[in-house]
Length: 169
Image (tube, rainbow, N blue to C red; front, side):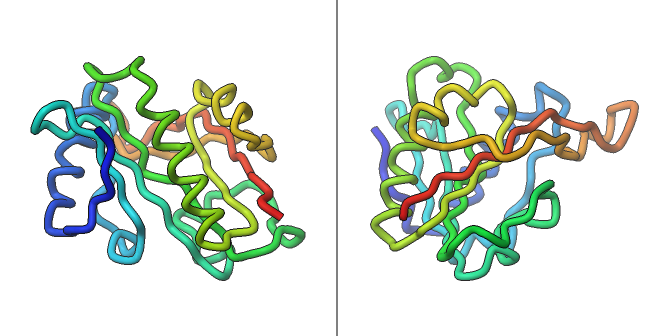
């Protein structure tokens, strides 16, 4: 069951899920950032346990988007408001159930309902086909720096990523 998370005091549970999902890959999960308070969040449950989560941020200016400084392309010809699908996480034991696709559809339709003209998402390369099926277009490929766990041999790894854009106008 997927539901919108409106009680932000439960965000630590989402952070815990991120740790459970990403730490086995050696990635230090992101902490709560300045976008959490204004973003819309969704979580998926299996019984009482959170097994997936994702958020949508909406901004008037593209430079306000989360991690905009990492974007390898110019957005000067895109029209706002801008939606950003980010912080998607699915617990390893819950992968393969279509939760990521359900969360993507939900966030995309919500962004359009909220008046976004452009929706962006950067994601690991493995999700390309599913995002293209929703109407997203690849605009760039790049390596995204991810902080690693203190036990790792380096403090950062470069994660192959793809930047997608959806035009809602």
